[in-house]
Amino acid sequence: MKEMDNDFFVIKAKENGVNVIGLTRGTETRFHHSEKLDKGEVMIAQFTDHTSAVKVRGKAVIYTRHGVVDTEA
Image (cartoon, rainbow, N blue to C red; front, top):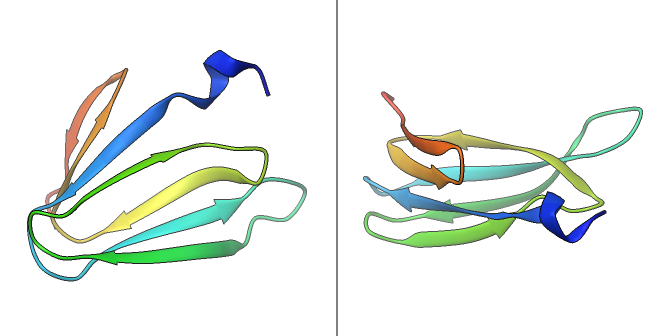
């Protein structure tokens, strides 16, 4: 991957028990990593050669270079 392709993004939990799930890259998408965040916790992450997508379940704010997403869960 090019250096600019793996920008960081930030997930801040607005409640206890927010799930952050990493999904694999390749011909078949699968779950490969999971984290649970409590209210106020922040996770800094990036896409990699192995991670093509991230699923966030629960109330959280996601900050990216493209903008801010506030979940409505």
